[in-house]
Length: 84
Image 1 (cartoon, rainbow, N blue to C red):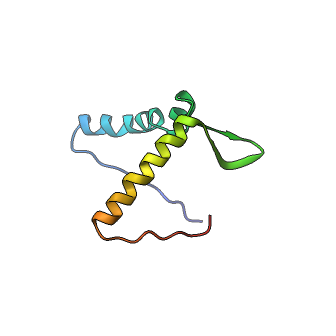
Image 2 (image 1 turned 120 degrees about the horizontal axis):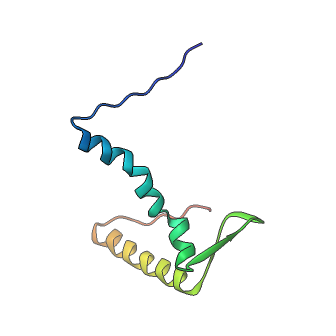
């Protein structure tokens, strides 16, 4: 039986500590936590993965769509819609 072993190496203790703190910082920036705190959307157990947007969250979502579409146009990309 084979077992996979992972290892990391760091130039100094400061770099190692920065790496070890990364998961904690990621949890602080988790979109699910922030969305709940800011009351942007909610999810229900009956519909896993389905987002139910609240007013402010939907406004932000729409503004992001406008921004992304402007960048697509600026860099001459085409938007493609796939079935979701």
